[in-house]
Amino acid sequence: MAVVAITDTDLGDGSIEREILGDHTLRLLHAQHADDIREQAQDADALLVQWLPVDAATMDALPRLRAIVRYGIGMDNLDLDAAAARSITVANVPDYCLREVTAHTVALVLAHARRLRPLTDSVRAGSWTVAEIDAPFAPADDPVGVVGLGRIGLMVAHQLAALGHPVLAWDPYLSSWPDGVEQVSDVVELAGRVHHLTLHAPLTPESAAMIDARVLTALGPAGHLVNTSRGGLVNESELLASLESGALGSASLDVLTVEPPTGDVLGRLRSHPRVQMTPHAAYYSAASKINLQRRAAQIMADLLAAR
Figure 1 (cartoon, rainbow, N blue to C red):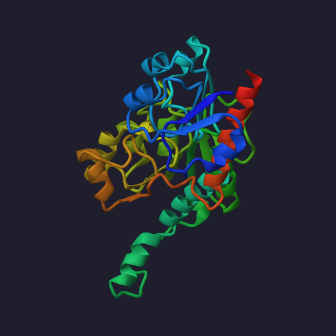
Figure 2 (figure 1 turned 90 degrees about the vertical axis):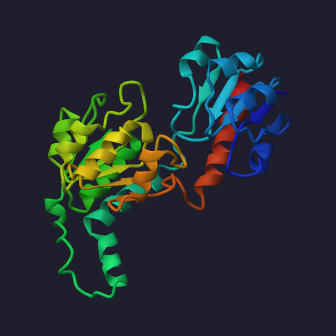
Figure 3 (figure 1 turned 120 degrees about the horizontal axis):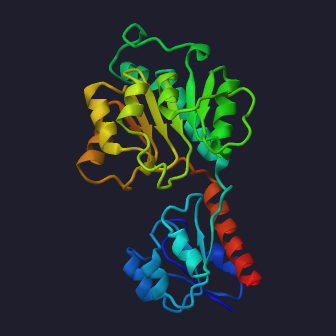
């Protein structure tokens, strides 16, 4: 039987994982740093990881390590090349919250499109008129750009198109293009042709900070950036500068490079009047957390059985 360590989690006490992993030994570490993993998981055959980074040095410090499962879709906190070089199998949970993230993204687009925040603020201030609020565009005149047409990006595109929004997209890796979505060959061109730009790409060395001043300026003073994907896709310093200069209209952010936000740039984004920020909550529903625990534990059990 294997020793499985849950390095870090805000999902529960490990009881769901313990039930599924059966005779395997499960340890809940509550690690705060990579050093904690290296010190506390010396005998671990496998890791269940949520947020903490697992790099080559951590892998080398755990001589029995043979499998890592990430609680989540993205794996940018795991050094995949180092794992492959050490014959460590790495897996994620790619399908546990697709509808939740899609719904959250569409809600952010529609909340901005329908001016819900300024309308609510106006009513709270005692007004009862739309005269003070910029008139919303009709859906047919309110195009949305989607960066990345994976499972979530494609669902977002289809749902917004069903509501009447023209949908354009950029995805350099897609081999066949879906009906009803206009293909654009460059992300700057995409930003220049839409009112809302929503991000659904993995964080890789090629995509890191790809949403920079050029893209934001193309999106324009009335443009709206939505990110429910990965914080690192956006150059946050240039995002703040674009908002403060008026080059960009607004942003809705569910993910950041540092969570919770710390430091000058993220602190100013957090309090910016034209930024709507949610606490990495796009995945969240009554069922999603339990589904994530069960799926991660079952994937781990299958990996251990295969070995």
